[in-house]
Image (cartoon, rainbow, N blue to C red):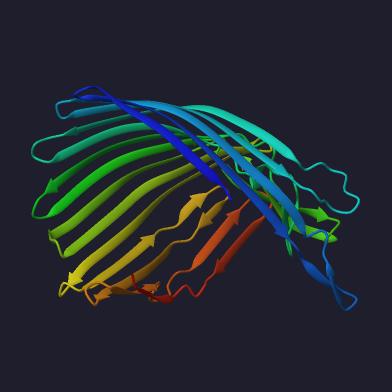
Length: 365
């Protein structure tokens, strides 16, 4: 069980300004135990190569300071965050005859600045401009070199992984109306260095006694996502709400593998429509539909997907009892596909789950 705590102190230094200072600590332990049995000579025995026990921990310490000041309709909010992330792993048991020490302990310190600017007019035009630097440490499984043997392949982590740096810039405009809702436009850029992605290869392995695929994570050279978003909220009254989102974005990845450069660049788009309505002041109706075009990652392209969800809620006996009915993927259209273009392994996969489901929940105070 993990634990997290935070202390924040806010102090106004004038009528238009405030300073915030805080400290956050988080502890996240994780224990993994996998026991796999196989049939040998007609009997079930423990498969020592596919069974393992691991103890992972992540300790996170953060100290931050932000200042917010208003100049009429302008608001300026700079900040800086000092972060220390400690990731460790222990493997109490390994394979018979394996003397490799798989334990590890990695420390990732970082400094993360941010700046947020906004401006609001009396005619309800809102403008914003922001910059944020994010730094994420690899997780414990990604750092572990312990081999995980699957049925027809195996994978490992990479102890040489570095932190992922993300520079985010966003600019936006939103216009509000009392009798309509709002319309907004925004442009964004998210540039990453050292982004973690999976490399898929193949080689002969003694456990399988044949050539099998294997994979491990690497830091790609650089990547960025640049896009535009349109959002619209139509709310003519308190009993109806319609929201529409449209995204158009370019995904770019550059990496070098075995001293050879690889470049991927693809435009994608997505749509989402959400609806909420209240009928006869008793029944709430929700519905949402979404679509995403094919997207690109390192040596891999994911095919497009779409679906429709809906739900009902009704209150009875002066709201002493509520009943929810939620239906996911009503038309059972959600399907997944992927094309891999690794220099050593090329493959295409398509799979579909029956994700259509209906849940009925009754809540009584």
